[in-house]
Amino acid sequence: MLEDLAVVVAAFVASTALGAAYAVSRRRVEVSRPVKQVVVLHPSDLPEQVDTRFSKIVLEAEKRVKMFEERVLRVVEGEDDDGAEA
Image (cartoon, rainbow, N blue to C red; front, side, top):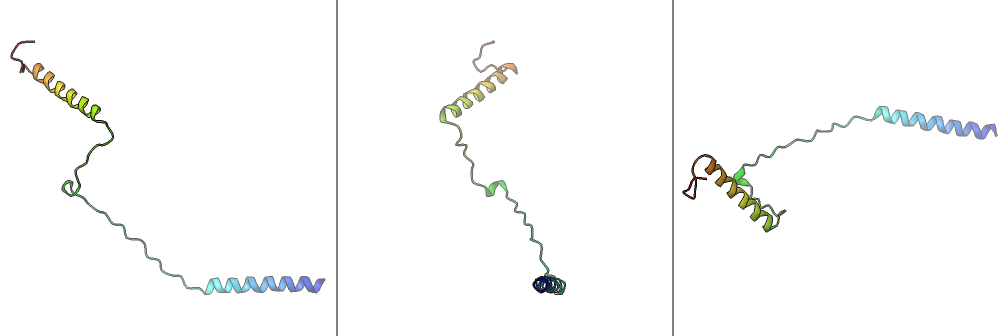
């Protein structure tokens, strides 16, 4: 029984020694760092963006609100588009 234990311990010590020797003897491999690339796009390079999230009804309402805001600004600035004082 002691001989079996001695064989197991000897195998463990031998494999550990071989593993340590292998780890020490290995040369380090130089790993190159990845190159970071930056891509700069000009607005003219991009296709025209179309907002498809909103329905046509919402887009039409936004257009009318914008027209109303412009009309209110003209009235406030004194340029009444109907020709009559408000």
